Amino acid sequence: MSINIAIDGTSGSGKSSVASKLADLLNFYHLNTGQLYRAFAFKCLKLGLTEPTYEDVLTLIKTTKVDVKFKNKKQCTFLDGKDVTKYLNDNKIGTIASLISPYQELRNEVVFIQRDLASEYNIIIEGRDIATKIIPNADYKFFITASAEARAERRYKQLLEAGKQVTFEEILQGLKERDEKDINRENSPLIQSRDSVLIETSNLSFDEVVDLVLSYIDKKHYKNDQQEKDCLK
Image (cartoon, rainbow, N blue to C red; front, side, top):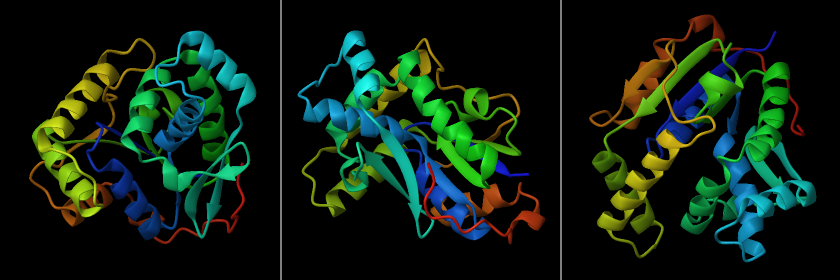
């Protein structure tokens, strides 16, 4: 039987990096749910749909194929047969993703991919409704967050190091707006499930966060033999 770990949290909280590190330590696969929505958003951007409507999303679902493959246990997200992973962290794509992700029809498409993987493989899935909607019976559940200021400071430094011209204020404002949308959206809002462990990272280093999460996981799972399959649907 597969072992599932659900990690939810706010945007910029570091949940993706934590999930990736945990996957390495536990020898699990790591599925970044956000990349699935961002792949659909990337298609919107390519089509010039910066503010897609409900009708646009319905058409998008019918004409778009998003797949996940793992190469050397790293997630690669494919859009219509092409690996688009390296393009998905663009801020414009993130903005579009936040607009289309609340639509239930699109969520149903993404949920199918996630549950299919969770049923077969030892996997860490992270997003915003994993413990509440996607895999509520996950073996372990965590909710990772930090203050908006702490998250903005981290992202600001990351973007500067990547050569991006941004200001701290616009990053902070963007995070606050994203939080507002995620918490108040009608379908699958961002909330902490009752049985998720809250991990507040504002004053913790990355390694401290990883160690804290690991402290809740049974050590028998630390060296789990994961099936070697590098091509997953």
